[in-house]
Length: 166
Image (tube, rainbow, N blue to C red; front, side, top):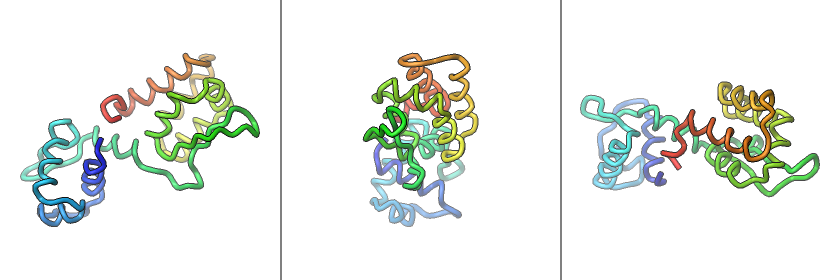
């Protein structure tokens, strides 16, 4: 998703009242024609739906916003290979977390799952208790390595439709 499109979705989600197109375009730092073109594209891709004479956010748009929202620096997710073995990978959003799970060593994934780190971050920081519980259940299933990686990615993709967003 383009930055301009994300900016449009974010502005729409934060708007407290109706805005005319000129006001909205100014708020997203685009021309009215650029804004209209981006909004039409977002509607075609299923992020917006027609509401009267304007547009509203779809579930897909709300998921895109949740995926891309950065958490405060003090609660970012730091990946480790083991105790006192930090890796140089940090997730500031669920989108970054998803991308890093794809590339991080499977040993790191095992380490964090069995300590409950993923559950805590997803539940406490991202406020997604359902996803936290689903990923936490992988411990009881005994998932490890590449099977764990696939299961985490699938859980996030199923919940947020990541394949369509990234």
